[in-house]
Image (cartoon, rainbow, N blue to C red; front, side, top):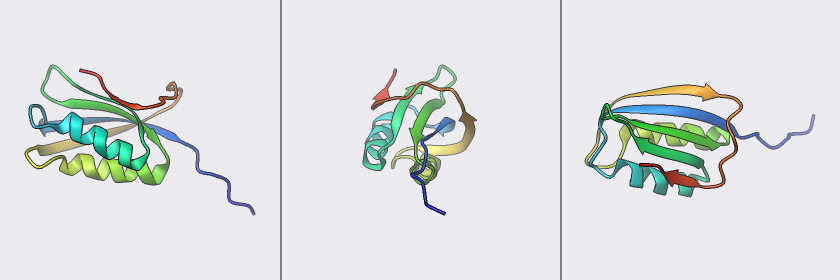
Length: 97
């Protein structure tokens, strides 16, 4: 059996804790670019951060693991993950507000 290239997957993340005002979105964009992940990240009104990430399974697992730690001044209490189907393909990783 031939190995076929891994298909990109899409995961929605919701990160809660002290994740706003600590450079979380900017650090996440940097890590996403290093891992070849596309999508977006944004602050939510309830103080959490939401992200939609696309990439291969290994890169997404690495990104989710990073999200559970976050940047130096963050305190992550919880990361919820939801697999998404039918999401439009993103070309870059963007900060959305």
